[in-house]
Each structure stands twice: as structure tokens, then as C-alpha cells.
Image (cartoon, rainbow, N blue to C red; front, side, top):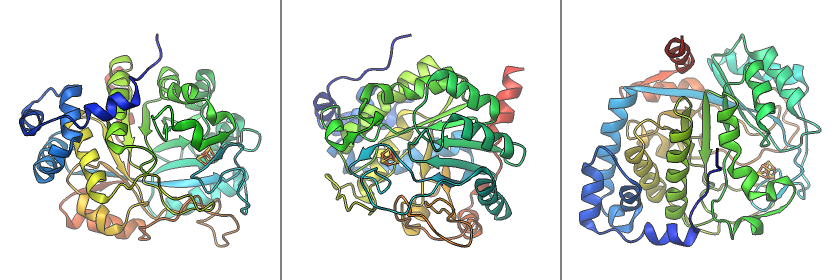
Length: 371
Ligand code: SF4
């Protein structure tokens, strides 16, 4: 199989600016959107029709996902990192309080989340294979697998055989964000460490899918490069993965830069309106993709987006290792903006006529389908 590749980023930027009103109308009407339709949906012309985009996105989301909003929470197990990424609080150059949880400590964090009604956990770490490598995550997954409906990871990119080991241990989903698909900008932000290798990172979702992971998540960190071009790249990456790995469920996350240790400021402003347009465009382009909104965003915004496109919300999150237990000894990755508990977030979802889902049914459906 060939690796996924992209056209020049400037070409993506140009494509996403060209559309006129007629192209936007066509993209809103069609049931089989093309990349040209995606470009139209990301364009300034579509930005002036944001209400129509929201309505179409809501309609598709209701048809494909019903009322369900899946709930998950992250567990940060380590903030050690061997990479220097200019925008990240965990960057190797930053003088922060570092900590890696041992298996008992990580299991205690998981138990606390379980007590708060969380059934889907996302294990997160900085990239430090010596402190939290494959063996560590295998041991942790084996400890937790019988207690949770789904265990996802957002850790250093791995080889296919390593993902296969993690899948066998009980991890079913991998999230890995390219951060920026802008190949020229990428090395100016990833200053040292393995993450400087753009191509190895770009091929990570396909290695995870090839290893049998049930779900693979991609994303771009918004605030680094042109968000419209990132949207085109995300759409192309999604379409390619869907074609190659039709059994794998796909998700997209929309992290916007937040204040963090190191004091990096965004290179591009991405406001809520732009974030919403990007999310609606991807929903209209790919009817089945799961769309995640994390607690990086304010409660007001998250509540406002309910029913319009997102299908999964994090809740009650802490981004520091050990942060759910009593004492907070380590530095968080970034500041969260929605501080509500899991129950409070679920209550709002219900008030909007939607159903917070704490159990992951996908695994059961997929097992039944492949039986
Ligand atoms: S973004 Fe990831 S790899 Fe880069 S410094 Fe932060 S934790 Fe490390």
C-alpha cells in the first residue's frame, strides 16, 4: 500500500478560497460530496452562509448518529517528553513539574473517573518511550480493560507491530494529530526529537488502522497555519483512510491552541465562527465521521454546538498527570475552559433533547458485523 500524500499546502489554501455562492449551494445540496464541495464549504463564501451549513450538518448528524453524544475523559499518565514542540507546555525545553504515574497510580485515576460515571477513557502522555513505552501501556490496558467500555490512546506514534500489541492488550482506538499539515511550517514548530519527522507522523493513522485498531482519530492544532487549508488536508486524509480501511471508524478533533507553559502565542487566529465552519464542513463532507469537541472550549460554546455536528464530548477533564487524585504535583498540558463535572455536562446534553452515552456500543456492533 502507498502512503497517504498531500498536494502542496499553498494549493490547498487556494482551493479553499475560490468557491462562489453557486458552488456553496451545490455543496449543501449534494448527498455525495467531492473534494471540490469540501473546498466550497470551507470558503469565505460559505462563511457567509454559516446558518445554512449548521442546519445541513445538524440534519446529517441526526440521521447518522440519532441523539447520541458519547462521553469520554482523558487520563494524563506522563508529562515527560523528549520532543521540543514550540506550542506545547510539555515540551522538553520547558521547566515544569514532571511526573509519570506508575500503574497503580494510573489505575487509581481510572477508578476515580469510573466513580464519576466515565466508561470511555483516553490515556494521554508526552512522548517519552523510556518512561511510558509500549510495555507500560500494555500493562495498564490489561489492568483496566475489564472495567471500561473503551480505552483509547493519544501517545507517541508507534510502529504497526506495536499497535498490534496494544490492540491485543485491550486498546481499541488511537488518536494522533498531525498538528499542522503545512509541510513548510512543520519543522519551524517541531524543533527537535522524533516528532520532526513529518512523514512518519503522517503515516501513523494508517499504521494504527493496519494493526487492527477499531477507531483512528486525526486532527490539526488550530492556530498554527491556515485553518481552511488544514480543513482540506483533513478531508483528504479522511477520504484516503476511509478508502483504504473501510472497517475502521474515523474521528476528527478540533483542538484550538490554549495558553500553556512556554508562552507560545497562536500564529493564526481561529475564532469560534471559523471553528464551527470547519466542523460543519467536515460533517457535510463525511457523514459518518465522529467529531470531537474537548474541554479546551468554553462551556457556552460546547453547549451551543450540541445537536449541530459533534458526536463526542470530553467532560470533567484534567490535563495533568495525577490531576484527578487529591494532590496536583505535575504541570498540566494546557488550561481547560470547561470545568464542569461529568454529571453537569450530561445534564445539559439531556436538556437539549440529546442522550449522553457513557457506553461505547461501536465495539459490539463491529464484533456482530464481523461474526
Ligand atoms: S505536543 Fe506532544 S510531542 Fe510535542 S512537546 Fe507536547 S507532548 Fe511532547
